[in-house]
Figure 1: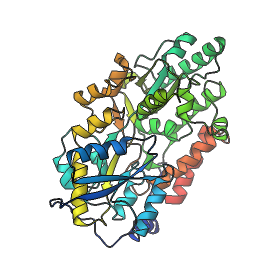
Figure 2: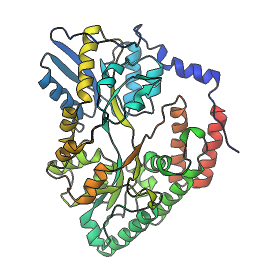
Figure 3: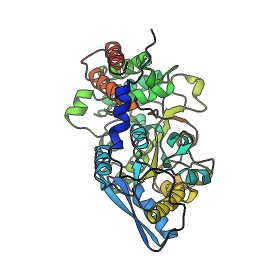
Figure 4: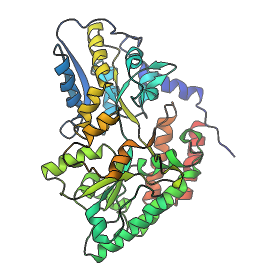
Length: 434
């Protein structure tokens, strides 16, 4: 029977009040439409600044065009970003602008009145800026995307050759991927290599993100999650076959996806497009090995989507703290206008970040970077995909994702079978939100 998950009145009230108590007393009506007066410094939240240069790149490129406005980037902890931001908003110490790290928590900020209306900026953007609609609620836009990731399949051409396995050709289904992973593991072992066929990081996204984007009838908010089962059965089977590191080893040893692929411990890896910039930087610094690599479309449910492969990723946008004064708001609006421009997109593409604009000019910049693979398949992958959001904008998303996160851990650790784990998660969702 179809479960219909409804928030109780108490849950709705709780969600509404999560940030309502954080309000500084300033409403979130559109502001900052006037001229910027004098020299202005505006603060922007970011994370992992030493390895995530995109924030400073945007700040510097904007300042070059607007020398009277300085953007100061403040570092937050990457894993505790939203927790720290909510606390700072409550204390009145939050930055003037802050990044929406994903859509999972966007509704919390928006519904709590902690984002300024930036519809006037959105109205000026070109049609080729992806992700604006994700930050639009009841025809009001609350953040401007600067980045639109997509999940790819990264592969080490040298290890494929050593194992005698044919490279991806852009048409792989998940069954093709699983077969290749096992063939790679066997071939590499025979060649005397300790590398696994593939590496699946511990995040629930690596399984659930693809299933939610690709499976027929998939709907995270429905609470009917049977479509996740075959995706988990495949992942568990690859662990059992030794084609990928098992979840227990991954978590016990705190493995990182950067080191697993970058030091050639895995022949392939599903991962977000942001990893291009990371791998380039680590190869330049010596943290990663030098080897021939490329990226292919993520494996598909079947061959019907080969021409426009379906993948997933939330956009990454920037919003404005409504507690700012009018002059800072005006400066912040100018910054967001720049964020949505082709100039900003090109600046990000120059460091390997996939911006919210991926037109021909941006693609040319991206593939002009030294070290970026320029083979036909990598270029096809960058330019052709149907990216679907990982997190629906809904008050129930956080609760449901947390339930599914627990199910992911239980299934991948072997504590429960995929079918039983998903069934338990469905029952729990119905009980908690029914």
